[in-house]
Length: 289
Image (tube, rainbow, N blue to C red):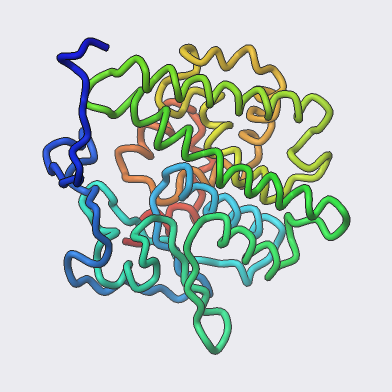
């Protein structure tokens, strides 16, 4: 980088509202609501406020997997939160998640409602509540380790690589190289682990898989940042096998369609030629806004 293009940080940072790329209109250095808006409420035990981003998809897959097991107590109402228009800064949403990030959930299955935010916390809450997708043996610790691995690793994929590769207003070689290197290191971690394991915790499908797949599985299947060729995903054969296997689960197919915009849903169904998975329950959730 030449001296004329070098950035010298000031002594005190000031917010430049025009220097944010595609997300400049919704990113800000302060928390709290920007407007009053009461959240909609449905009739089911769980009220989910989210969007079909990788973090949001984790929770809808979890709910659909629980329902596929016949756990009717896991019925939920899904309400789309359009983060591009700042709906996450509505007063009702901020009451559920003061961090203004999707997904956010209200568990109203008991007398006292409970708010939940952060996708890992939601997955763990549901797994414990319904005694599903969380090992009870020594693999429980392994499962939790991989769950928290995802929480710590995915920001490098999304906020790091994804931002600079796909969303930043200009392509900065240093930034793309830095985060590409880290994402490929993470993929290598996964690939080596999956060489001897069908799933993240041996032969059992758990919340660790449900948390990791929407990020790294989607990346492998070229559904994230259109970067599969750039990162040479096909060379991670164990990750590819794992990603493709989970992609075939009916509950996963349903979960990825919930809380999409109608345009996104239409494109996905057209591309996958799989409208049969657009069942009545999923249609109800997509229309609840």
